[in-house]
Length: 388
Image (cartoon, rainbow, N blue to C red; front, side, top):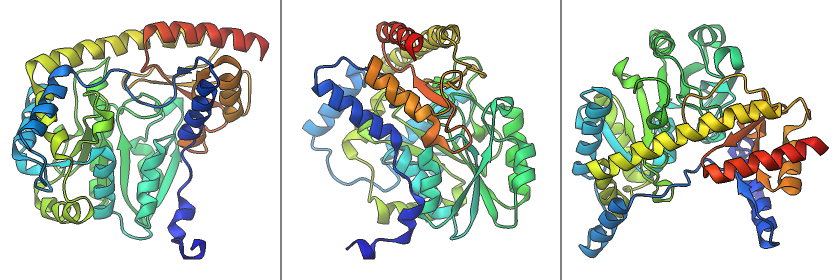
């Protein structure tokens, strides 16, 4: 059977985040207390009003297939969310509900990436992004982006590295693993440059709801031709519900619908009816309180890490990650992360997953855990570093 596996698998690497999570689980089974600052998952779960909506949907028997584009009420609610949050009037017909942001990225790449096509993205970036491109025989072209670029692509870099094989860019703002955003003026220039080159721009905005230092902003305000991805996982705290959405140019919606019908049939019906409650006044008040708590945690952990000796060259303005340079102690961030786990019981993630440019000196630290855990983690890391 191994001889029959597709060659594209050679271009898809394992997810090291999950390997560390498995190591942590084994230590917990041995009785160790582990503080998890690795996997990017809110420690908050869906508010009760959302859970109640799911239970009501099940009790009412709303368990059948839905439209591949999502139930009309949810698409309308998402359109209203863009109006309320960003002041944007997005036609409902442009909104496609998906089985998580991963399905949205899969659909976008299926629709836009030709075999052999280059897609520019920053190094570091979320590893699955380049693997989605590889799954459709495209080639992710990773461009080194350091602290001076806020770990993000710039218009200058896009112009410099665009070739005859380049067909588009895949961006994330705010970014995983760095928590940094692309300034609107810079993003506007990138979109214009790519459009002038007759390419596509995909912008992953799944952390846009967790932006702390700037006014709410979406790439949809810059150009109608961008493809924007969002999710109910992060700001809306529904990771395991597997629900997200796309906003695409209206003229290509039928092509995305055709793909969605064949690849997924439809998103989870229960999750969709539950998500309607996310936009209630009760739920939105809770989400904003939780956002404020994430900001409070960020404002604690970033100075604390710097005090410990980590170089945090760019303060994250969104998401719930800190990208920190650990080269003061080690030139192997993977070993450093494993040692921290086994010796101090704290899970962080090496830069290995996010691209080769920062693989050996950077670690990603998630503050999607309680303030109590963050303070204990800082104490453990301090003791660990004293002996390392």
